[in-house]
Image (cartoon, rainbow, N blue to C red; front, side, top):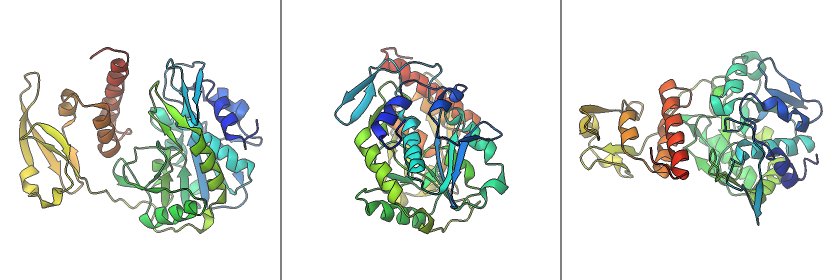
Length: 350
């Protein structure tokens, strides 16, 4: 495979889906010299570097399937019968390209990200292996502009680091910006051992659905720009193990029975939101709604969300800002909502 041909590589990698447990089937496409660690991830080290580059191999599906591509200009999608798997074969393409360009770094291909970051969670416990690194860059984020600074509301990299990375990409004409709304991914597993942990947009949209698509032109541009970044000169400000939560702008307004975004929340009397009661739909009893301002997070309200008929966009806001896929209750809620929206796309209402 010619790793420098991003489109060809992407089409090859997404010709099939790879649910967790089938990652070994993709070995035939991995670069020469790749190794397997003690928990099943794949890695290769090039030169001397304090940078880890990461992606994940598995796709968000239950069964292996052949994928039928539909190509419309710079957009690649499927015929609608399967997901595409751009999450995260797009990230694999970037790592392959950098490896082919001989960019120094430790390259990690994680297993089981879509089912709880299994591979990264287990290998991140090997502190002696990773504490020599200053940054981990995971090429796994929707859209075309994000440098993730927070995942599940917890800071994973400093603004100074993100700014220095943005500056490096600007040199190649790629305009990125800081994004506080990251979901929990592989890179977050390393925040206790690696100072700067981030994810970068790779150009996919509508991940985890049969409408998933990839902007291949953006992916090609990202690959070239990434090879030009001076990774070793990026600013390091955050200390491994530091815990900081982002300030939340989201409230559940019990008076108007509406979940909404409030840009002027600082003008509100916070005590008004300390404790409210709301009659749940379908005849549920009144339940307290608690807001913990120390952590700026909601407590005990997921039952309300399930009953409030969220739109898909509202669900993504909730998922990006308040849910932790590593938490058992949150994970169950996410699975329920993903199933709900999957059925709705098929014309069924749960």
